[in-house]
Length: 461
Image (cartoon, rainbow, N blue to C red):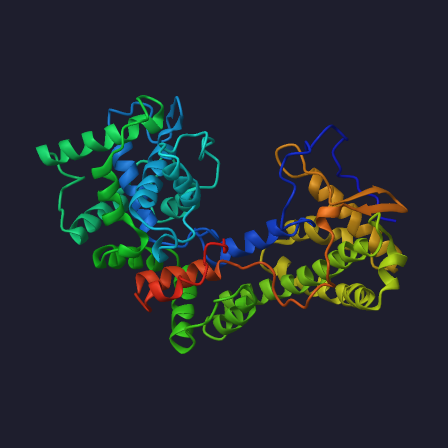
C-alpha cells in the first residue's frame, strides 16, 4: 500500500465557492512546464501576440515617469499602476472594437471590458484585475519581456524596450510621440495620465477618454503590428537564445510545408515530431524526453478519467477498483494504462535524468513504484492518494479533491463525473507550440490571420 509521507496536516481548506477545477489533478504539469521552458525559453502558453510586448513597453514609458513615484508596479487606490494601464488598453479595444472582431479574440480581459462598456462604466478593480498576480496581459507577457530585455524586473524600460518604442513610433508614423521631449509628447502624456486617473482610483470615473481610446485601438491592436516592430522582435526572439532560435526556425519551415500544423491540441505530437526531424542532437534529445514523459501523462490521465467515468455508473458516485473493472470499456482503458506504465515510467525517467530533471522526475513519478502497479486495487488507491495529495498542495490553501471518502469508500463528486470512457490521447500538455506558431504568423506575416482567427481561438490558452 502506498503510504504518503509528504502530506500537510489536515486543515479547513478550499471553501465551497472557491475554484476547484484544474487540468492537473495528478500533479503532472510542473514537470511538463519545466520541459516547455527549456524548449521555448521565455514563453508561456499565453504569450501569443508579439504586439503586446509593445503594449508593455508603452505602459512602462508612461508609468516610469515622476508622475508615478511608486513606479510601474506601484500600488494605488484601485490596484497597481500597470494593471490600471492594462484596463485602459482593454477599454479601448472594447469601446472601439466590435464583438467577434478577429484581432481581439482571446485577449485577456476583453470580455470584462465589454461588460463594463455595456454598463457605461470604467473598468475598475471590482470588474477586472486588482491583484498584481492575476493573469492578464502584463502577467502573460512580462516574462518574455524580461527574457528579451525589453523590461527589467521592476517594469522599467531597458535598451531593447527603448528600441521597440522607436520601432513602433516609426511604424505608426509618429516618431518621437512617446519618446520625445517636446510639447506634443508632453500633451500626449498628460492626456494618458488623465485617462488613467479614474482607473487608479484617483479621479471621478465618469469621464470617457475617447481620444485616448481611439489612439490605442488604432495603434496598439495586436494585428496592426508594424514592419519595424516585426524586424526588431524577430531579431530578439531568434538571437537571444539558441534553443528558441532552433525551435522557431524549425516550426517555421514546417509551417511552410503544412500551414495547418498545430491548429488543434491533438496536433502537438505531430508538431514535436516534425520539429524533431529538423533540429540538432541536443534539442532532439529534449523533444524525445518530452514525448517519453507525455507517454506517461496520457496513461495516467486515461486511468484517472476511467475512475471518474466509473463514478457515474452508480447514483451515489461510489467507486472502487471492482466498479472500474465491471465495465468493459472502462476496464480496458484502466488495465491497459496499468500494464503499459512500468515501461513508460522507466523510459521517461531515464530521459529526464539525462536532461537534468532527475529530482523533479522523482517527485512526480516515484509514487508509481513500490507496488502501486501490482494490482488494479493498489493502482486505484495509488491514483486516489496522489490526487488528494496534489489537491491539498495547491496554493494558497489547497483545493478540494474531486474524489472523496476513505479507503474502500470512495465517491466521485457529481461535478467531476465523466460521461464517456477516456478517449485516446498522444500528448496532453501543449509545450508552447501554439504560441510559437502564433508569433511566427505575426512576425513573419506568413498568413492572413483575420481568416484564421475567426475560428474561436479565444478558448485556447
